[in-house]
Image (cartoon, rainbow, N blue to C red; front, side, top):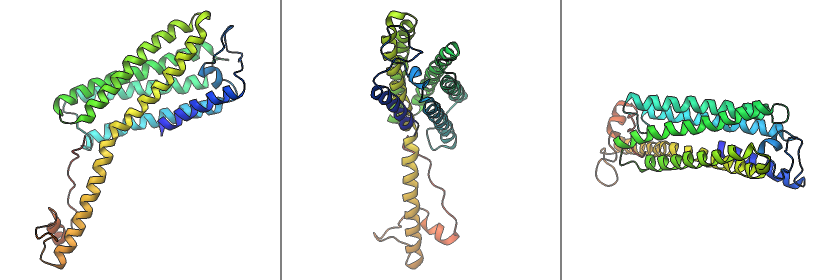
Length: 267
């Protein structure tokens, strides 16, 4: 949801600017022809800008919290040591800092609060980049214990790609945004940075996907327990193939207690 809302907000803002004839806003520098996202967000689309930033970051932070909880409960690969839990906690803290930066930069727009806006922009970028660094460190340590889980490796490399690309783009953006001759280049890089952040949000879906798959497997297994229990109660306690249908089915039928589902295996 965060990815869809953020991408939709960016698309709506860019299309609006194009449909209006690519106007020059009061916040744009002399010679600047390409509007920053902040320039557009400080005009008539400011309510959309604020709402989009709030929804995106709040649901993104909820994804971080969900990932932490699923690891704690064993639905995802569990942290094997204190260091991994500390890295996860630091990742959440800096993600919250990035959240505050994005929400506040949308509120304190570049027209009325240019310095505050620039400060919150740096907080937003730095917060999520540092958060991604801690997540990569956590996943690297998890990969030592769970080498067979390809999702961990895939997520690690995707986040590392985000870190390296975002740092390089941010360096160019900062270097060009403080010179009047390169405002158009800086504006282009700001749009690219925003799109790369959309990709980063999407990587969190990859992190949570194994838990969703495991939930479906458990649901199918429980349905199998029900079928096996009914057959065992009506007949001799064996499934249609001549063997006992599912482990624990007979016990469920006898005791009426629901069997405990297995721990997640598809990380």
